[in-house]
Image (cartoon, rainbow, N blue to C red; front, side, top):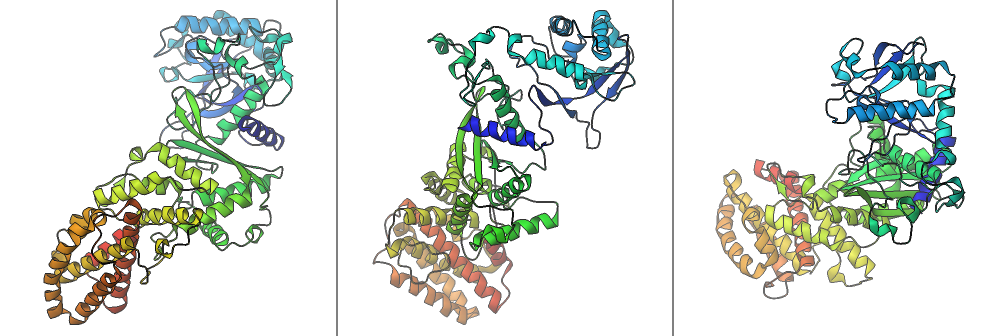
Length: 613
């Protein structure tokens, strides 16, 4: 299913002339130099193809004959390669003589009967070239180990672009030219259903975070155990050469590291790509752009119009309006594909795979946004999946900040899967967030929203009608849930401490007692209430009106508690504790804004509670 969908996408993109996508037998590769040859095969110049527009020169990407898949063997590419093969010189290779000899032998055989002037010039060059000539002009040490192509003097096109070179490439790709298996041993391709020559080794897939820089494979067999039934390498999962080329080429295209590529994003250790199944290029692009905006809504765009467009799309989706109100070319029945890939030694693992209509995906993303909804909102732009995953990692420093390496990769993958499928969020999200808030004291709005999302979805999918388990979006003064009430009470007591001591607070009760108060309230709250009386004495003298409000809030919460303080709060109630704390703390800041200027300590506290991680 995955390979079939990728192959069909390749065919659609080739038919519409997608820029940067190579035809069968070719691939985009990084090329640094072009060696200009005379008709007699003498090197007359070396042209740099490096792009110098950035901070440092980078190779230019050219469509060249597809490279050979090299592990430990020596195999030559056609009409291009690195200098150890082309010129027999290298700064790192210890077998340059063998590699250069392989390049010469391969081209001498492949181009033996060609009469094209450019190809003949290459053969003449190889027949009289010696690595010692590299020390003289027009060559330089900067070329070592770079990829080079050839060009005939006086012409603009490269040798591999000449019609004769393309015809020679087609002969090399023909089944009769395959080494090893005769053409009559064709098998039925698992992807296309047609009988064709099977790809023994599939082209490498590049661009997956954490995978080998030379590329990795989804399909590969390289152990003796795979020969048990008389099948070797690709025969175990027969995929034709054309289909193997198609799915790997389009996947490399989707994974390309281009600032304008919006079909690729990273979530944990997974590299996620997505695409639309539509013949109309405009319709496909509009659907893909919309999904990109919804999956990564807090991405920073350099263009103000683009940012405004994303916010407008989010508003349309949040209100449940038809997508055609946003763009007439958005069709809710368009099939969308989402593929998550993660590194696994020399191979790639499928972290998740989803195929559904745009309308269904939009509905699930809308539900995800509703599950996260928290008032007052802790963000200006809705958080991306990766930003949510970062909230499960430890926060360090001032201001608190999480590191990508600390995010559990499986947890990030399961979080993405839950969002796309509409299923339960992984319980590890709630566990990690609660544990992090208790350990590092960072009660950020994103973390509280995650707690609320997990609890809300669990309740909805379990069809529970218990009002005590409802998770409020904003401050709920009527809630009787013990965890939520204790979170509110903790925020009120902290507010009293801040009001009494002002800027003299070195560490609030949140810094010292949040973890124990949310887990074992019976041990902590009696102590906190006694200490609060000392704070109240000071407040009554300085701000008697505020003292009355605080006492009223404390009594209101305590009256709703069922008797004594609970000895222990479970994981879900600890999540509700955080939600109650957030709601009550934000209500305090809003009251301060309406009545009088808040102290600098309160202002910083509000930023901590409402700011994104």
